[in-house]
Length: 169
Image 1: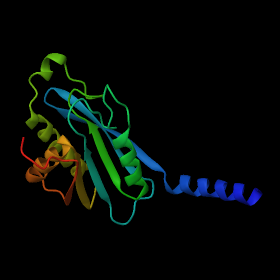
Image 2: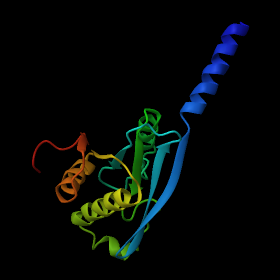
Image 3: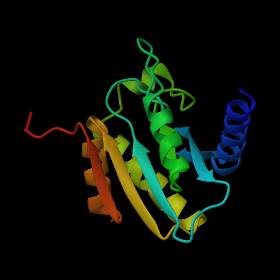
Image 4: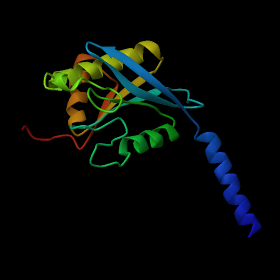
């Protein structure tokens, strides 16, 4: 019994050392609000630094993948898994969601292009402030379209589409 317990304790110790995450809150001033996001990096980054820039789907979905009707932390868990594999990740609260609070009367003025412009601004700020060798944009659902349009304006190393649309509306 003691060797089994010792094995579990050592495994937990080593995984806690290697899976340490440096989490940095970031903000980005935009025209009428301040957007908030989280950069997560392995405590010991690999030789090649790759950023996976995560863009959530439609509706009031926050940077963790949650909305008022369902808390699942899907994007937070995705980020944790990627960091454990040695990638850096960034995810943010879009306008009017989570910490990126927008006056309710301004919500009616928001258009899809604002989400794309915000994603481009975030990507360019991250590239300017951090020395990532590669940036991959990962979009879920509506975020897949935002990712593709962001890439057209500010090219990335690659794009990952999770449950993106395959047909026109």
